[in-house]
Image: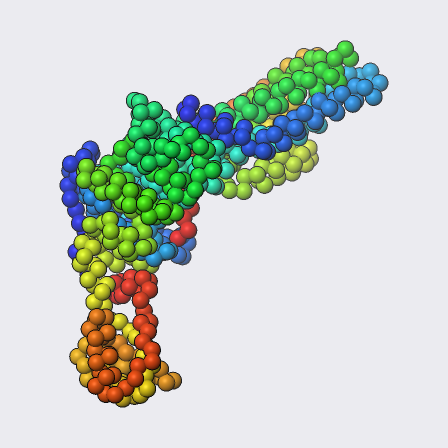
Length: 244
Length: 320
């Protein structure tokens, strides 16, 4: 970790208008949860909480927030040329990647974790959905990390990381992972669901996942390690674009 | 054409007693496009100008020297160490890139301080303050860079590049956007840094800029090293090259026969009523033409040099 890089990356990320818009996105699940709570009469709080947190937080808000910050902290600097001021320094490339990924993951956690907890408690508290809410809240912590690091790596590999990330979230995870069992092994969403279900204990049966918790943890660690290695390797060989 | 390299031993060169910058048969291509073609030279302390028209390969060369581009072929070394894949060289090297992008939300002071911190200097604040003072940015150092003029941004970039007082400073079109006063100040600064034993290499497509600052030049054209060495020698080659003029007069045919008799004129052409003359020396021809016209009783209407662009000068140097 390199603190000057962390500080300047945080300033850059938090100063952008899109940060404000993404923060608003994180508020949406809480508002929807409040509407459901006020208007609904469901007695199966566990199922309702699991359905809401899966559909809104894990499937939509978490990957989108991680995508915006994961591709923004390093990829946008490589695109606009400001990254050369980091790269022209006697700093090991792994420190740059780790510092950038830590900021992306940290901001994602800061936005998604409170949103998950609040939305889960608003819709599930007093109806048997508390354990589900806590399970999801803890599970999105590693989920934020894996997504963020994955998208940081993607942004070093391609300048079209945002599009590639959207395709991964909505086509791979949203569509293919539900159709073919093998594709679920490479779905961060499935890791989060598996972990949340395990953390929720007996109430976790309400959370449907294509992989078991143990497999999810192992695969998440593998994905994290591979994505970090790819990002470091590609950054070390990154070449500036010249007009000539 | 002058000799292929100008090498001086750097008193501040930390790693070896050889040249500070050394390129050996370096090429760089993008697909089928050759941006730099078999370029070799060696540089020591002093100011060297990298001169060439836009698109000649200057930025590609500088980026390879700074380790931001991998040579497709050949070897790029600074103080004896290959620049590609070695972040440790940035303790000795500073680069001022041509692209203007600088973190707009930082102030000039914060930007210089960040660069000093990233260099892991023992006293980053003192180094940043010195760099800000050196580039004369003190008055606006606490304003965000996003509000800076082009010249101010350029100076902020230079402050960032020299905050660690590198032995080798590479600058890509450093005078872009600077007003004449800032330009003079920056030239003075680069001269003093060179006098202190540093190796300064700056690119420019403006001949006069290079002439005022650099003792040595490297002329690149179409990715090739067209000339290198003492500026005055190259300047003489540029001045003494064949010149082509178009002339309109009251009797082009008679003027052509009169001019071709002169030894300094080695070609005349009369096509579509337009007289084209090729002369060996610019100054001699401007004396010869009016004299020949007067002696023959011919009235001159128009005289126009046709190949005075810098590109044509570079092309001529490459052909030699």
